[in-house]
Length: 261
Image (cartoon, rainbow, N blue to C red; front, side, top):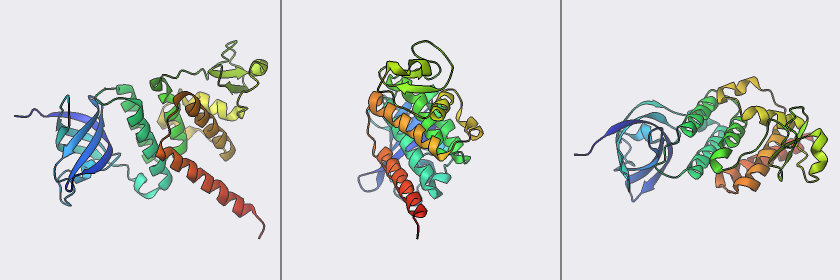
């Protein structure tokens, strides 16, 4: 007789398996990422249909195998990310964060800190907080799990906390104005964006609403985080490419609106 246990989880993905079945990946607090086989999941009246929607949080009842596929029996206390169904930005950024979760840890490895961070970011997006800013917070706080440790709080050369700062790739952190000449290839990031990045590595997602950021600063923050991920992480996700395309579309739309008739 199979042993079933309850666990707290978030659905990462749901894909078809053969014609009628499904494979659902759930990130759980207790077991990490686990793939579940769901028989006849494509049936319209399947009892677990509402529990298998991506980004859904809940308490799941399942049989966890150490090797191969696991099996899901029931779910309760479900919470859906309904904003992702109506808002393309929320959907895009949530999808990207989910792919980062999938990329940063191996299967069946519990990482409670990551689970709590990911869950809190989903909650913040559902509450209407800026999904791009939430995602940059997530990216920056995820860096240690990728083996990347950067100094954003003080100058890496003299430990000064006096802003303005600029970011140095070769020094793995920020430089105060007195040491800008020590890296002729520093990124020339707007000081306001670096100040926001400094805050994002320390605050919780539910505190995001207290930050007010101009589009120009947000663009610089994106440039900083993108450069860090390109240099130190080196993964290229399709969901990130889609976000970049959306950003290009938005910039093109702004330019067209500013053109004289």
